[in-house]
Length: 408
Image (cartoon, rainbow, N blue to C red; front, side, top):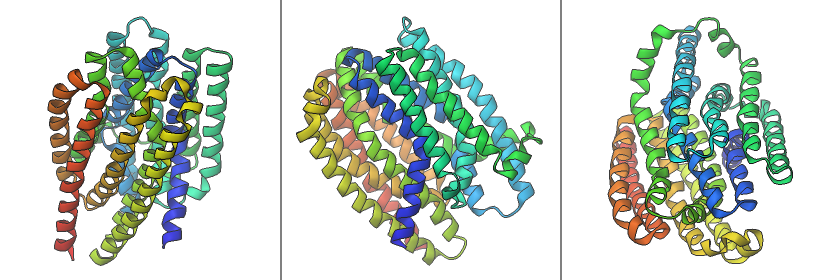
């Protein structure tokens, strides 16, 4: 079972790497060849794109993945997918325009740099629809080499344009273009999605939005409080400090990305095991939590090594972020625990609880950062996030244990 969990998680991480992993490593390339102040602008636009993507998705990816894993009625599934595509088209266009306006408000002198980030709101909506099908059905091995090749090609082209040709605005266009191509190619390989394109259900949008609303609120609040630090630093501190902080946080994100892939795998497997029995679901949850704990420990040690041994030689301009990275490593441990716990709770369909937790986290961070960031800068932001993640960890674990006891 451990080998199956590890193997499926690796496949999921590689597949997700075609989008989120590529974006993270593109940011690290940007940091390597940019001054902290300019990188701060890139990180700011990227944050807007991240939030915009989740607003545009409106919980559809999470909902459809559960439907892929558990639905046996093909006609109902096709109708759900048709409605999901309508939501993605409508919200994608609206939110990308809104995101462009937000970026213009924040940095009106970088319009060409804004455009690819606006497109990054739409492109993952296309790509995730078929990818989630393969992951939920545990067929990742059928697409992993294609998706990985596309991701690697995207990074190579990005590096050449950004670092060699030195055209950063043009470099970022590569990401949404290749993501869209990957999505369209994979859609052609999934008959149920392909058939749904011929019967789009705009009339089913409202019903689907009602179903995904709790997921959307929790997810949007989650990314909002997860990126709130960037906006507070933009408001109260210098562009250089924002760039240094963004670098330390983004350097840790590849490790969080792998944890996220493991959590996505857990979500699908736990949801599927619930069809068999509560005991089977509890056992599946326990196995994934053990694997996540081992991974979190390994990731923490690697971050300490990078921060305290290799940082100066790899990223000389950002050597002053050593202690920021150490604190970010501690935060990662709690984030890993929260990711796997959230998957377990959502697999049981308890979306409203996750929404309430997200509201609490969001409210807490607003207050904490409003007090600490103006006084302590980047370290105030890190302390706020650490306290919030630790509290979140305690609340979610208490609820999940209670839920498993009730189900048994």
